[in-house]
Amino acid sequence: MNRKSFLKLTARAGLFLGITPSLISCNTENKVDANELDSLLTSRKASGTAVNLKCKPISKVRVGMIGMGNRGSVLIQMFEYLIKNNHAEIIGLSDLSEKKLQKNNDYLKTIQKNDASLYFGHKDEWKKLANRDDIDLLIIATPWEYHTEMSIYGMEHGKHVACEQPMAMTLKDCWKLIEVAERTKKHCMYMENCCFNGEELWVLNMINQGVFGDLNHAEGAYIHDLRKHMMDETYYEDQWRIKHHQTKNENLYTGHGLGPVSFYMDIGRGDNYDHLVSMSSREQSLSDAARKENFWTNKFTCGDMNTTLIKTKNGKTIMLQFDTHTGRPYSRLNTITGTKAVHQGYPSRLYIGHENLQWGHSWLNKDDYKTYRDKYDHPLWKKLKEQIDANAVGHGGMDFVMIYRLIRCLNQGLPLDINLYDSVLWSAITPLSGLSVANNSKSINIPDFTGGTWQKHRENELLRDII
Ligand SMILES: NC(=O)c1ccc[n+]([C@@H]2O[C@H](COP(=O)([O-])OP(=O)(O)OC[C@H]3O[C@@H](n4cnc5c(N)ncnc54)[C@H](O)[C@@H]3O)[C@@H](O)[C@H]2O)c1
Image 1: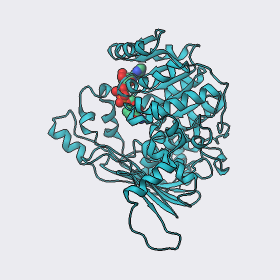
Image 2 (image 1 turned 45 degrees about the horizontal axis):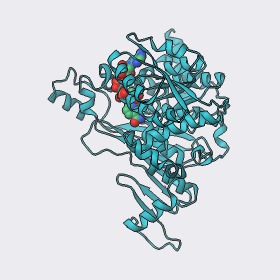
Image 3 (image 1 turned 90 degrees about the vertical axis):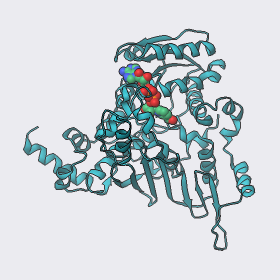
Image 4 (image 1 turned 180 degrees about the vertical axis):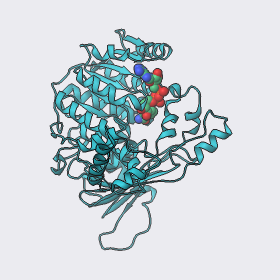
């Protein structure tokens, strides 16, 4: 591309984004490259055909898993109940490391009669697994940078895909996922386990039953001090995670905060994101820790705290935060404010307003909170209580509920709880927040990845088809 056409492109992209060409060109931290702009400009319209996508029921889902590190090793354990009840079978596993595969295969042998095939030793071995025609579903738990490629390859080879977050790290890849999933008519699911957690399901159920009145504002986050893990030599394969912090300054992990609050707010089901502004604090904590630990680098671009504000089409606001660098207690905030009630997480607290406008300043006391907790416990959480207790190793049960729902919806040919558009919308906030940060927190329009289907209100799948 010559300079003239690049300038033309940036100017047009500026209009699309609502920012001026000079701002695009003066950004210093996170340059908008020509490929990304190209994807923004040529951003096709989604057809919206993946809404309520129903595929042929699969009586026993045949699964291939790629990436058997920290996450893959937990996910495989969520299959015991499903394998024993003939709902699923694991056909093959892939990882770069033979040792990790053997460890997971040893476990698999304790819960499944048939042997799984193992694919390891080369970065492209996973393709042999994805190419097999006796697999229905690919589960992907590899480093972020492989997610789009592996998901697309899986769908192009006739597989449904369920992938760890984010499913894409650039807008171009977001649009690629839309194009391929709509064309192949395969499920494309972002495995956001927090949407399946007991507390989040309970809040969703209360919202559905009118306890909160009309919603106006939500707050979600991924606040988790990962410095030790990120600098550990072996915790993440080839220390892949910290490398993203060297080059990017944005919200790198949106789903834990955004998934649940997007469900609360009917995003894609009657409302949609409209625009965002994002700001990162200076970077300090990771480089300080790196110096202390004599880590091989102390140069990082990702600010300690990224805060992104999203305005929805219907006028609600979401505050989303990302901080994996500061020494502080874990939090996903899980805050939702409505005209009648408010919930805040960490620890979970509920406020119920008074009909007669009597001022109230207090959270419910322990007994009243418990009354609401018991009365509105989500039917799915109640139904699966026994299995949840047996699978607490998966983040207290939410990983089990997620995998259970994924497999059981496939068994019955039901739409998945997290669809293509959720997956792309939640992923897209990563590059869009980066664009805003790099442009003095300018307001950025959020593309409509749903093909306009968000305008039709429909009930959240997690409340609609309790199986
Ligand atoms: N939802 C959650 O609660 C949760 C928790 C932890 C991790 N995660 C996500 O899971 C993913 C994996 O994270 P992790 O902590 O397990 O990292 P990890 O480094 O422990 O595991 C990644 C694995 O992928 C393998 N891999 C890399 N390239 C491969 C290739 N070409 N073919 C086959 N295997 C390959 C590596 O060998 C490694 O074992 C990330 O997206 C992470 O964000 C999600």
